[in-house]
Length: 431
Ligand SMILES: C[S@@+](CC[C@H](N)C(=O)[O-])C[C@H]1O[C@@H](n2cnc3c(N)ncnc32)[C@H](O)[C@@H]1O
Image (cartoon, rainbow, N blue to C red; front, side, top):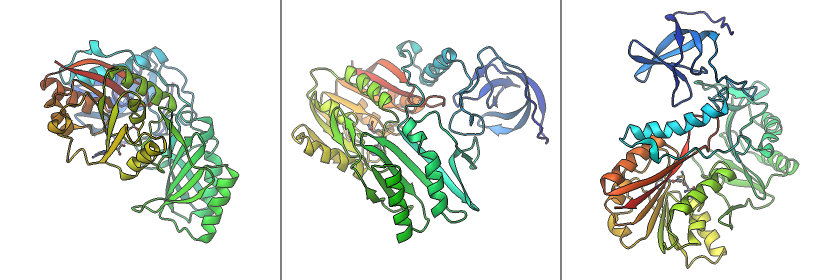
């Protein structure tokens, strides 16, 4: 039983948690409205204080946990609770897996789809994330380095993060020391660290001064930590490499790609492999002409190029450059074409897609509303969607189905363990 000492106003009530919401908060009903109770689980009985409105419901804080539900386990990370990085570490794995799958089922149900097309969740274990995005702030002589706190902009100073790979974990303490030596009081920095095949690729985004001494400091840090590359970016400017000890290297479909500092990357190798396997399983063996929309640096382009000719379309110039350089180096310029295009403003039209065999589209969280309208009008026989947002996916899937496509299957993938985020891959066939 836990007692909170914090005092204050607000209604206090005894409540029993009924379900787990999409963001990982416990939910119950009060006077016809949902009440969101962070850090609780179904079956928990609590004394809660109502704090105010949230969405169409109420937000509450737990004053006392009177009784725990049947599926609570000890969270493995010492930062769980205050840290905003994870929301659901305290739930037994079996109901956790059901909850994650159900996030997709529920989002689809809101757009009129039944859950029977949704396959079991493909799991990815924590400790596999190869990308770590941290914030740092200097306060006096100390640097706080970590994620934002739960519903707060205060940085939780991390000792460890169980989500990321051991190599990234080992970088946290030396990076904090290195930042403390260079940042001035109240300076901020955003850090993106990526584990690549040739070593860690570090990007520091900060308005802090970068004089000769700071440059030498970071070169020495890269040497000491055996980084592949260390880049610096002033906010609103392009990043510049401060030191390249080895070219960072990723491999998509067996083709070596040099990543853009901080550019989009599937969060784990395991996740990338599952997504690729699912995408390739939905693309017909006979497909000769394929469009890869929102291609990034080519995660799917290169595996797809083993099957047919691929036209990769992407908005980010540097990611597309990385893709194109890799294609040329690998002698694939006859299999791959690239196009920089803003697919939100100027989606590829149904006419442009005429004669194609398959489209793969993998938009950002906002989804691909206008692109889905064009696809729904097209004669492409097979469409494969990859999405990190079940709500925008369900909206776009409804557009395709209204245009005459049949949704054949949806597979949720736990790309973001212990959070309320879930990825999915789905297939559509023209009726
Ligand atoms: C979820 S990522 C997928 C990237 C790639 N398929 C992969 O798996 O690595 C979404 C991609 O969409 C790109 N993007 C975002 N907004 C865009 C837009 N308006 N037009 C074209 N591409 C965009 C991003 O740069 C990013 O590469």
